[in-house]
Image 1 (tube, helix red, strand yellow):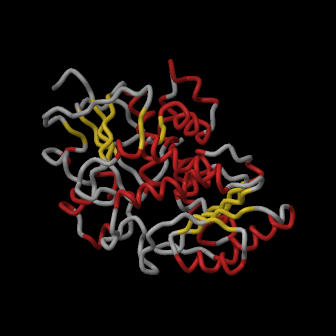
Image 2: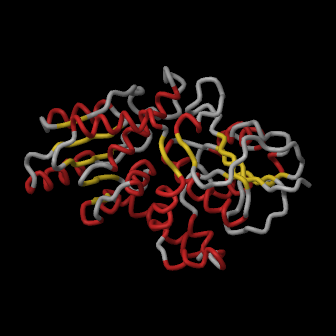
Length: 331
């Protein structure tokens, strides 16, 4: 056993997923008095398997460690002797690709720290997640953290972003330049995921049109992973802004695509789109996609100006219900 305790945060899936997992992990590290190490050296955003997290973000007022000790005191134990591996590599060492295809939470649980527990004795805990798990920590909001009991999960996550996380200055400068040069009095931010996960394009158009009835000169900022969606919006509207980015073949994921020419730049473009969405006056997004959820968390957009399209589809309603039941069961 070593004298210090560590939380090793691995990257998994796209920018929205790992962004949310990072926020929960920062809070967990504070609750458990562990040093945090963020390892995004997986194949999604790294061109050479180096850790790209420092190229995206800075952490503030968080006890960090630049490296982790050599120890067999690791939880989950399957990560022993595999701390340098990615989540996918470890999962595929023990699970079949068919079992992993459906993102079964029961399988995830075997490979990540349970956020409901803060009493682990192991020196190193491994943490990764697809979803927000702040609700699992609420039972531990006592003592110095008791003030968090009165705050909503969203308020807590916004607080973590504001106090502990910032973009690298070069990425921040690109966002500021775009806002200063292109954003107008009223900007409608629209996020449409339309490759591996598809929602009704017409639904987004309906909400954009309703806002345009009130603010006909609005700029539409479109963040999408599909060139067909961009083409549709350009056909419908003249005052539209879309950032330059690489698009995958239709139906393929943007952030886990072997054809991507520059994975790190792909991550930068994702962050630019997320933060530009957060600078808009209106936000139209699908809550079942973490990309839009992160944009909303970063933003100061009034609740009345945010439109969650998942509320208007059966599939979205089912996913939201499952998430609500999961949270209520734990809390």
